[in-house]
Length: 239
Ligand code: UDP
Image (tube, rainbow, N blue to C red):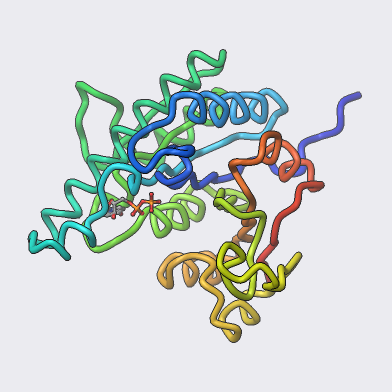
């Protein structure tokens, strides 16, 4: 008999940066297809998957504001960027043989469904991979916060944060090759050591709702499967 999945339902955060591949902007279709394929394989393995996708590969509100744009308007554009990524990811999931369902926090019915908790749960229970677009639907937030919010309201067992490195380090390993890497951390340790696991609002929401955060390298082929099996190289923040 196949082993029961370790997690019943997870929230996967895919940053916009992860979709750029080696590029400096936009969507690398090869990377998109690989991530989609891994999500489809995980869903087939029996884990329900909700994805919150970022938009930093296309537009970030803070960057627009730094160039003199009104911050709220710049964030509106940032949220639209996440919708573009979500539509692309839903398409790639369909092509990989799964069913991707993009649901936007800001209604735009001609392009994708509108996010409601009930609809997302229905789709997840039907075996679809739900891609939550437009973040929280509000400016001045990030998709990290949206990931923590959706993980809490969709009763996810864990928040998987896919990054460009294989866990949390005491300093950026790309600039500090000797930096120590952690296998596990408590929320309190992460706070005390001032480790930037997620932004402050997202971190507080996950901690207050006791949702474990698992940070792993989404660029590593097979990493999602390994993390879901509990064997992957990652940092677990909990308790
Ligand atoms: N954004 C927002 N509200 C949200 C989530 C995102 O206004 O709830 C905007 C914000 O401008 C942000 C952009 O969408 O810069 C893209 O999201 P984020 O920077 O979190 O993407 P990532 O860094 O994960 O690619």
